[in-house]
Image (cartoon, rainbow, N blue to C red; front, top):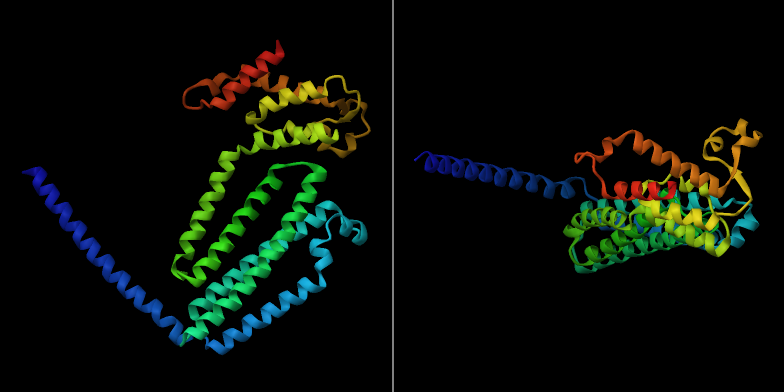
Length: 317
């Protein structure tokens, strides 16, 4: 009887809650639908705004074409550094993309359209705006690729790659929903955000960065050993591989500790071979993990950390 009473009470509370939620949703929906009618733009005003934005983007792309797509030649001519050329492109893209999509979403919501012709014209102008944004995004992606080819991967550069790729997906989804189902845009943005996070998890960033930088070292002979020492235990197998590749090399570089203190650069003790830099990091990690075994407890256990410890132990022997 207690169970039946509990189920009955729960069902009654759930039914009342759903009814109240429906009433609230109905009221909110009515308010939202009234907003465009009270504060909305006419179609003519919106068409003028989008046309002017598209003309501005067209002029910008035409005038700045060399800057956008000049690549390595543009750096030599204009005097940019690779870092300036890549970073400026990315942040400009971010601002333009967010403002453009936000503007179109807002105009799509508050613009009154009374015919199919007006709907198609609005969608066409909006699509042209997004096309210009995608063109700028392609430019920024090429610049980041140029930067990475010269200096190798870092965590930030990898994040930029993944973010731009999924931003492109979000923009394409926006175009699809604009013509077919505008109400599905928010769901697509949520899914692209989830996709971005899943991509980073599947890539295993630190291992990916170490692997790519070692491949670049084998091709060009350039390796930032100090940066490899900042990567997590996920990159441990590649630290071991890097030690094998750099063993016997005599060229010296600033050690990680001295790169943070410019006044120490004149100290001979601040310089070591790439192998010695990597070996010191591996030995330090092994000693730290051996002295503090709390990471072995089941609450803190991590398979990558365990594998790395066994590898550090093997290298130490």
